[in-house]
Image 1 (cartoon, rainbow, N blue to C red):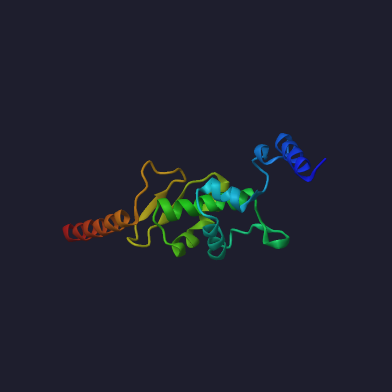
Image 2 (spheres, rainbow, N blue to C red):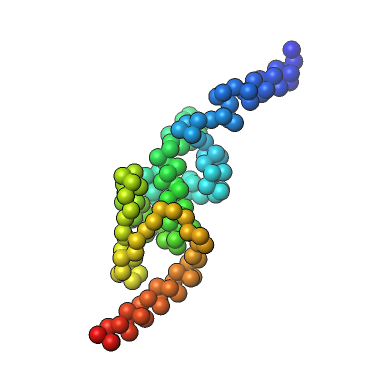
Length: 155
């Protein structure tokens, strides 16, 4: 059997195998490419987030190949939600992430204080119907501040 035939036969066996990439268990560790596909982000963003969020600690094998556990993927999903859907800064997301992970694992809802306005904001862990852009969030925060100052004048 030639090398090409052997490789093709091996690929066919891999695809048919219960351990092939197409039938990987949900609890199995995932490569950086697989996680990037799940999150719809480039791999370099995941590497960058590893440097900013200590909760992300993929297992690194020889050659630097990363393998992400379910806990890592859960944290990455929350980070993406905080940064991309809720308009948090990296510093703000890093500050609230440990509390959010703890609450989520306990099946609880948490209330965070919005640092911009100082008003408690209930945080749900379900995706928003329409994500709010950073400029929209900043406009809403400014409007909230103005309304609060008007309220103080009326009191």
